[in-house]
Length: 392
Image (tube, rainbow, N blue to C red):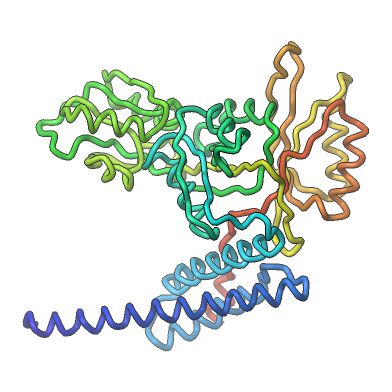
């Protein structure tokens, strides 16, 4: 094949890609019209039956063009997920008109390139208004920025699939007046990063956030004799290694963020669990209203009476009202030795009848009960179909 022929084919590919982008944009406009209809008629955002039928039809059509069913499935799972999230964002905006701001001032841990920075970029990419980034050195400072109205929102990591709950954040929530207004799950891909210009690399010191060291403990144990130094965030670790420009220093952080600081990855997938994700919460001064068509989650904080089976009685109330418990975390109450404050995540909307019934009963059973927030579920489970349907 001559160079001229190759150039001609590439021009055709470029043209086809542009046409695909235009079609995707057109599909998103139709998604907006669908969302508007769902608002008027109180229709749920997700229709699993229609999504399954759509995938089956597309797989069959794809076969006619010689396209692999797995490719079609993966492609349209992403498109369906984007459609769901776009609709949820639109419904949220219509239900909370006062929340639309020309500027979204958002506080998060670290600087450009930290995982909290990446999560912030991801979450607010679907929200109207310009994003103003406010990097902070600690979780306490992040909370303070919103409480003093220097920031409109804060993004806080709450748990990780490898290292578990981030207790310091739970302890901050125990004393704040802020409300949880959103959540998102972000993949965490740890890489060993060194300065791009370093030669004859012989690592003697590794910099990272304490949570990162916990998530990569197996890798560190196998690495051998190396000094570990903790930093306030993954971005601070990357900045430190960038400034040192030494063949003996490395940071553990996001491979995609290493380029911000002239770092390159020499080893990836360092986490103990290869499917490593962090869940983040978004907090603000004011609570929000979640439309009933949008899947919602609610977080409450409570302390039970000091009697046998008190926590069990609380959980039975949730069961009796068919409310699914997704998270139960206990933290000590400062100044009350051996007493615990319980954080509970449940699936459901505070505007829904069963939730109101359950919460009314729990308020009478507990010594302290507070709703920290009702917010949309950001994680969209992929649409799946049985192989028999796809092959029929």
